[in-house]
Length: 155
Image (cartoon, rainbow, N blue to C red):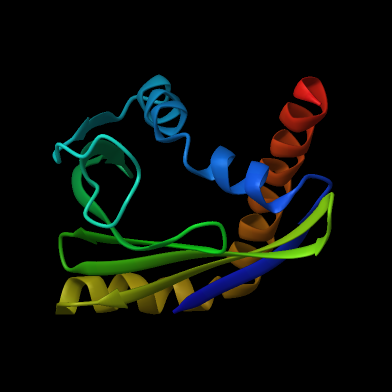
């Protein structure tokens, strides 16, 4: 099951990519929402092989997730792969410079079930695909707006 959207950001491609590389901010944000997040690797700068372990509650159950950076091509592409109980997720973020101060970001999430219970979950998500896609696009648009505001404060 795949979700994807694209948004334009009023900021240079290098600045947008650097904001996407601010992993400590993402970790703190997840922790504020009740997740336990920890870096597993010893890498000093963003690159392929960065790994996190996360634990969080979702729909009344404790979930565990391993997240790994599988592609890191500065300043155009970043791909993160997640594994949890029976579910493989791939999130890709591709950047394209439209002008010196305008960047297009394509954000895609692909979920693949690895066992029967995950297959049932994905099947139930497909039934709500229209509303989930709408929410997904809204969340990405909000995230992009936040990035634009951060850039305008520093510019």
